[in-house]
Length: 127
Image (cartoon, rainbow, N blue to C red; front, side, top):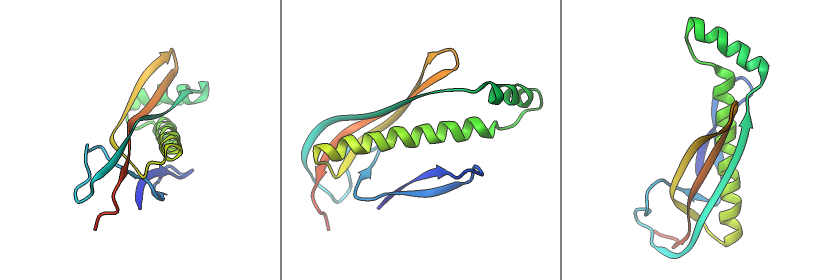
């Protein structure tokens, strides 16, 4: 089972299981053969900042340090993009995604897109 970090409400990282779906940044999985390549899959989300968080971030900018609310928001956004990528891969019949990448871009002032993409594949059972 593959796990990815997720933020709790208090900001702590905890493992989050993704049952049945292997996701890796490598183009192959050691000890496993790719039986079928199903194609590109992706998941994305666009998030905006809040005025309250921006004010807090401005103060944090004066004294330095991490802006925990932004960290949590971006982590949740990545998880949502990965969940959407996984759903698309599963709908194609994949049991893995290889070549996984995550990228961000600014859509407009105060809004960012998180995009996860990779190649959906069917791996052998290995062993």
